[in-house]
Image (cartoon, rainbow, N blue to C red; front, side, top):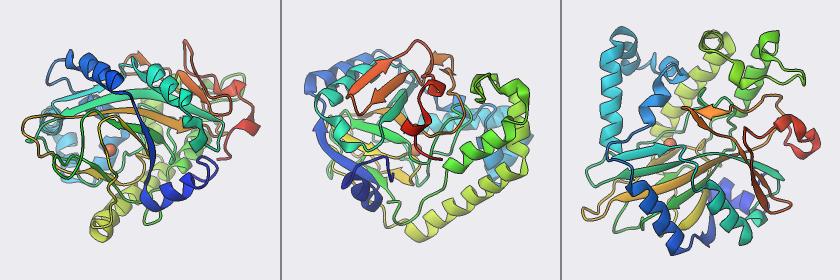
Length: 339
Ligand SMILES: [Fe+2]
């Protein structure tokens, strides 16, 4: 988060794993968001989509689930769906309805003061709902994912509980500060560029990799490549270390309804079990990332929905929505972070 967050927020993030902004969404906006997602049917779960033709499969090859996945793919898909259904009653990705409204509210109220870097891309949003019987997320970090391509080790999530998460209700997110242990991620952007820039099919006139042109065969070749396999092996190792050495060292923020937490999903995190049998746990998240000088264009779609089309300018305090993905080639390198 160095050069991304301003001091002292950089220090806070480094030591705690998140920034407690002290900002909250107004209650009517929180209720509007809840009302919007209330119209989605129970059981709507977008998580299994991420496991189709993705590197998670390669990651899981070393686990018992990976064996089942490769040997009995249909059965594995069913198990995967059951797993996520037991974790969430609803998991809705990419509605994109509240991104601009929430960000505009935050910028109108000084959200830019937390940032050292000028540009941040808001990629997509998600809504998560569970009940007291739902399985709480165990220790993990959100593995870089080829449905996105452009992810960084310093992704910034705006994490908004839509109900109180506290001692009584449980359901808080817990985070391992990066001062303790952190998985590297920016190196994946380097590996992607190195691999795909050798093939002119994927390089545009500006010398940028066009993420939308990377088809599943090309991706499969990259997934199997030695540098990527080494990175996956490192991820497997570090996840084991987080479980064995740091399980008791995760921090817990205060998360009252509507409160804005800035959190990096590339840090190890988990969730407390939800205890309230009267009210469901509801979370709204906007996934953002800082802009690096990697010559890789942003993907235009996630599961068929336009993404990566919101640009925050922290200097001007504005959020702009574009028709397509933000054209990163048009932003001068001096305004980007060095990879
Ligand atoms: Fe996660």
